[in-house]
Image (cartoon, rainbow, N blue to C red; front, side, top):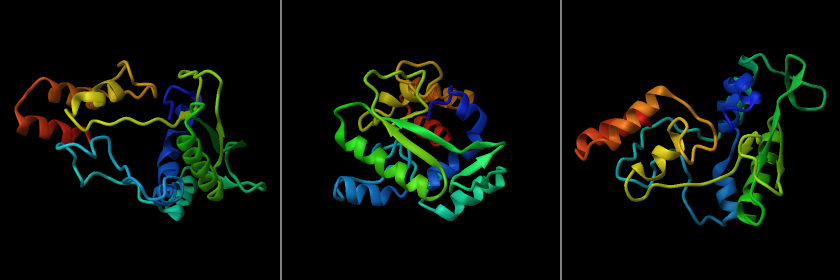
Length: 192
């Protein structure tokens, strides 16, 4: 999600509906033929991973309930609406990355099935500030600071989503300023 996009500023309360509306196992099974593991957190393949973090397990009924609790109603065209505006967004994907294009298409179809009008675009040039959502990937299989700080830290180099959370900044800074594994584990647990 591009958290600086006005759409998500106005509709941040429906982001969990999007997350619960994605059947990631189906995407894994069909797009990459079961090769891989489902992502549920930013440190999943790292020693500091916390398996007990909240996971957005596929639950289309919960997605619909979140939308309805947020004041959305089903429109005549099969998509939810709120305040006279259709609920929907565009996922952008880099050209030449067929696996992610296929993943985005599958995700968009799943979201349309629960009433979110989601489409996919493959722009000629990536406009990080202008996109609504972008399918990317990252990982921190080595030191947990690798990628995590620069992807989730406010105004950091690879924070293409514009994510900003003072507590997350605090915990990531605490984790990177010590080599004490217990202190790092506590900071990364708080981050997750």
